[in-house]
Amino acid sequence: MKTLSKIPMQLLEVEFIPEQLEEGKFYYSEKYKTASHLCACGCGQNFHVQIKEGEWNISNKEPLTVTPSFKHRIQCMAHYIISDGFANIVNYPKPKSEWFTRYGFQDSQPGE
Ligand SMILES: [Zn+2]
Image (cartoon, rainbow, N blue to C red):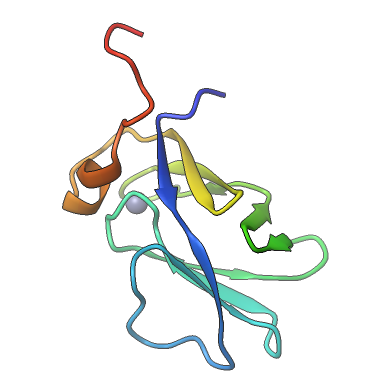
């Protein structure tokens, strides 16, 4: 899959996932085996997952690598893989945010 954009994504270990999340941070509670982050596209959706066998796995903390990929099935429909400290966006049907355009499509070439 071709990467459309690389958005920085950093692990932040917490006991409780805060109510207000910041963009570009992947909040992880080892105690509760959960993680939350705002969608890498900047749409503001909170992506909350379980970190356990059969769900998501943090295979490296620094730089952050998480498997499998994240696919939003509602609203933005973004699909990205968090690897080596970046959310690598491989599908992004509905770009719009300022956060995204700041980093957006920096790796793509016109006419590709
Ligand atoms: Zn999104």
